[in-house]
Structure formats: C-alpha cells, structure tokens
Length: 165
Picture 1 (cartoon, rainbow, N blue to C red):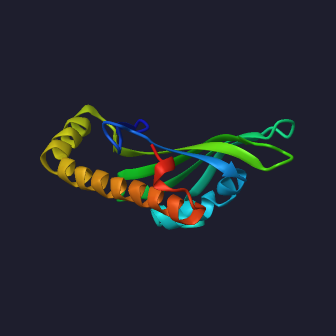
Picture 2: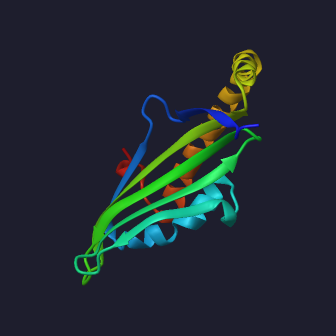
C-alpha cells in the first residue's frame, strides 16, 4: 500500500481582514517581545509545549529586531489552528525609546489522509455533508481566541486602544 496522501484545507481565521495590527511607540518596546510567550499562553490557552519561536532577529548595532512566534491548538484529529504573532521594531540602545508593530493572525488547517481515489471521494462527501459545519464552529472559536489574544496584549503590555489599528 502506498503512503497516504492528504487533502489539506487552509483558511485565514479573520476573513476578510486576515490580520490585526498593533503599533506602539514609547519606552522599551523590546520588553513586549520578552512577555510574548506568557501573553500567548494566556490568550490562546495553550501549554508551553505548543509554543514555537520560528524567527528571532536582533541587530545589536542599531537596536532593530524581528520576532515571529506561533502556537498550535488542536480541535480534533483533523483540524488545528495556528496563531501567529510577528514583532517588527527598533529600540534606541542608549535611551530605550523605540517603536514596535505587532501583527496577529491565525490560520485553520484541516488535513484528511487518504490512500486511494475512493477514500478521497468519501472524504469530500463526508466534509460537505457533516464536517463543514463543525469546521465553521472551529473557525469561530479560533477567531475568539485571536481577539482574546489581542485583549491580553493590551492588558499586560499597557498598550491603549488608540495605538491599535
């Protein structure tokens, strides 16, 4: 029997906007990046084993930085939500003043494995008859987690609503 292939359905959770941006200008914006993992744990309700830091760049000559952090939250055997936070900014090395742009977004990924064309057609039938309704509920739940993550950022880091776009 051949290795199973899979049907993959991937959607942005926050359609049609797709992303939430938060900008901050003030003292020590790099401290917000240091708090990101704890904010992600609280906002998305995941454990530390579900957090991944995919990119961290810091330039010690001018204080610019870029960080990308994501968390994986599973709903069932087939569907997972991935929550992403991107930090892009800079901090003056002498005074500590700087700015940061935080981008929040999430994707919902569903994977159905199949080994032959009959299984593939049965998966599509199952998806359209039953699973599509459940998946839309997962998308709504993931959307609530994104907004909870945004609210957690504003509460913990002290960013006001005027600085959000």
